[in-house]
Length: 165
Image 1: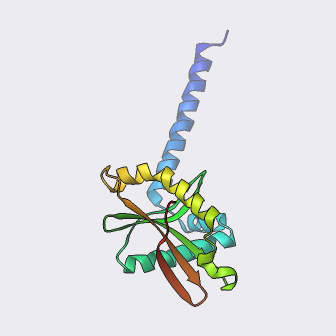
Image 2 (image 1 turned 135 degrees about the horizontal axis):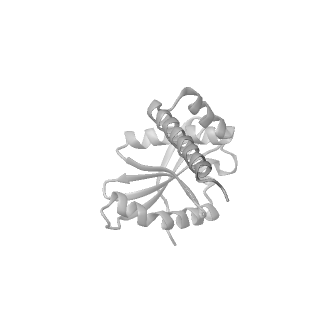
């Protein structure tokens, strides 16, 4: 049989370690993100992902300058990813940002083929209930699918690039 004082000592030690861990966690949270944290976040993405985030940022600033309000960014589910979700007045806009280094093979906008459109439609269907609750007070808005094409010398915004057929 184990002596009660031994059990008490073990429990007290566990409580002290847990309290110390909580204090460390609270101190890190209060300190805010550090330079090393942002460096870690940057290292987490591949060069292709970093380039994609850069061009999504360009597209986002362009759309905001045109009056759209960005609601969400990089929504991801099993069906796929939606780069940007915005509000254009009363319309919910799902935006795909594409970039290509050359205009061969149809350029960036030409890369949004039927398969990509189907993935975007499935992803939008997955996120629609959450977006409606969060940004439209539970009322389902008219939805639109836009493509922002980033070419070497231009950025083109294609409104209503495709519809659900």
